Length: 79
Image (cartoon, one colour):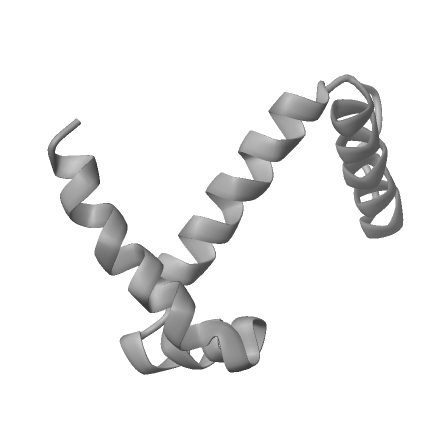
């Protein structure tokens, strides 16, 4: 490269690369990427922030989601 990129060019190149990478991903790749990204986001939250996030998502179904997790854990251990 003969000249360095200015800030606007660098941002545009980042956007272009992200677009190309997504275009070349399969649906399965995209799903895995989003799942990992969301888990990392949730994992960085404090416990109370995460619980608030989960309650906002599930709304009235939050208690049922917690119960599902509680039922799943023993079944997972026996696998």
